[in-house]
Length: 109
Image (spheres, rainbow, N blue to C red):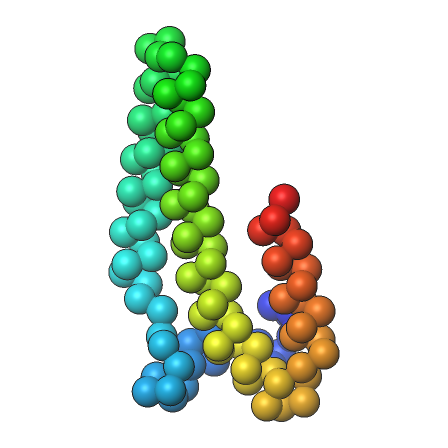
């Protein structure tokens, strides 16, 4: 089930139709988290421009990566509960699992 799959449209994929049984992602919260991450990156840039201590810069990079990983996991969770669940219900489970494994592999690198 790829983004080019006609069964996976923005209207139904990752936006559960039954929001009482599957948590719908809070887009506003995700955007807010990403804006904070952008601020962290700007802070790291400033630290480098100011020749700050390398260990401090690396600590901030680690914190930023962790924050971005948190966003990725939330999006992945939404994908699993929305797109993947729907694909499994429609008999496309194997393709959905293959796609999920590819995405997880990308997140690990």
